[in-house]
Image (cartoon, rainbow, N blue to C red; front, side, top):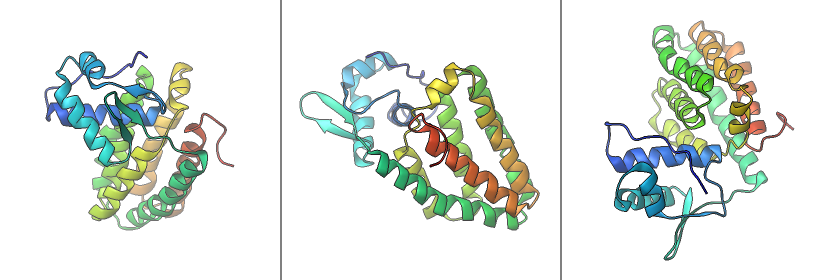
Length: 222
């Protein structure tokens, strides 16, 4: 199975970069459950030795994203529709009130400073780069939540987001329909920065309903 993985950059360790890229590929559905991926094959795609790939896969196994297949490689952990719905529900319980509190905190300058991250999401959508889109989206939301000063909350949301599956994103990218979703992040910045708590809540709930719809490539909500 041909994987369309991103090239590695000069920053951070190779192990960290590979783990980062593979997380995004798992979330997007580029790497599917039930398929066994070998470290040498992935290493060849990245142009590195198998060692940092194995190390990255072990990190992902500790996070519960993959499982070791003895003498063969690694397999993406399967999640049921019910489990994915539960993850989205928990995210809603955490992320919505956190964003609302931030809107009420009067941190407009710091929130507006996140605009380059929002623009990176739009750029990835325009280029139809699924992995870059998911990576930029992840960084944006963690940076936004990080302004609240609760490191434990940020860590938990990061773990939950990586357990999500956004199988509908590649199809949206192919059809050129990612941009409206990408621009929602700019709307969210404006709502939070202007202190619009009600608008922030509505945007966050809409965004998470959108997530619930696209993880299984189905209509929004239930």
